[in-house]
Image (cartoon, rainbow over all chains, first blue to last red; front, side, top):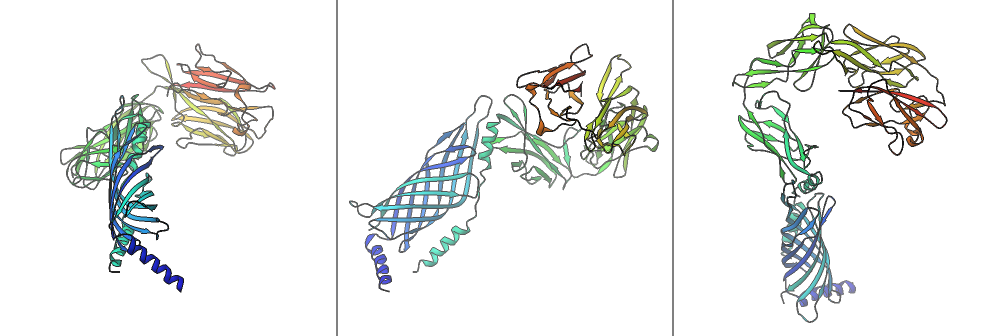
Length: 177
Length: 412
């Protein structure tokens, strides 16, 4: 019983002492899109704004915007934009490090262009997808900057389609005091 | 803890969020680029009139075809594509290209594959009633045992002329010995003349009918069955081919035409062998029991006979070709490989290396109808040589065993 009380106090105190309930995060991601036997690696930026509604459980809004396209074969692909809402589950901090899982609903847009080549005509495909977004990652609190953390996560977008979209994402997170 | 219901609601929303979006255009874009497809065409149902008209409620299936950068046609699947209509109040179309007419009006059909739009196929929905059979199209004169297709069109009370689909085709009772009819699933009927003379082809639909006189010319001189004889093991098969020798009144030359599928095959003793008259396997003889029988191919009252000897014996010092003892080669084909195995019937599992065999070709024609590769990796490959006629290919193995196959080059 004493162990249980100690754990509850530890969690409560870390929430109360560390950060305020609101946070924002800037992220840079490199996506991987597999289409048939072609692979594309476009990059994107992301902004998340969230609030903790329970200790280590937050609700956040996110928006992604494409930064660079990638070319494979005759095609150029961009992850044009994404937005959605997600729930964040994170572990209590251990020496400033926390693990987290983010589950969300997402709408994302992919844009694929093929330029004309000889007699082959140009083609353009811009398609919206709605589905789930799953992230798993770790955060490390910075020692010299208060209320700031860096994060690294693996992210998967799933719209129930054969076309696969994954990403590796680096982030900088600001917590209200 | 007040936020717990909100959190639960958000999680539930995420879990219930339906997946939407279609990634197939991305894959299709790669597919058509790999096939070098420069343009797409929508193929409608076969019609003989200028434009397709539909009544409300009728449906038709569309296909799609690509043209590559070498101007060659490329078959593409019509299934699971982004089929579209220009006016969804007039017609709807499924992902598999099935259009259903909803209301009167003009509508275009097109398909988008990998971001590439096809041309637009125009049709008109006009709810109308049939008021008569307008015409029957097809050859006025046909040769015996060379099938010809016929179609009928109808007049509608909106002034349009349309192809008729649900037609009951018939010949007069007195004409039935002169020709046969086979209706196709599409709008055509196939007439095959059997004996010289004239027949009246009648199209009847919804109480309307129209007759069409067809003359059957007497240009079929004889029928040649090849091979002239054959030995077949019990339960083994042998393809026989019927070639019609036609002489035009204005042309002294004889034309050879393959009529295997349109002659009537008969066997004198079905206890010895059976022969098929089914479409696609006409002339296929199957050995039943040891003995001999006479095979007959007839076109009306014109007969050709050959002797088929059925044997149960099998010898180790025989060679057998993959095509038996006879093969008919289309003059326009790119060629075919002959394969050989030991035994009296060919077995692919015992196939000999063509490069280890001696190949030879002989012909009685003035000009070799085939060319044969005799050695190297392409040994045993025969190609037509711009001339119809017959030749014999003989193969000999290292033990001196030989086998021959007759090759007939025909202009189908």
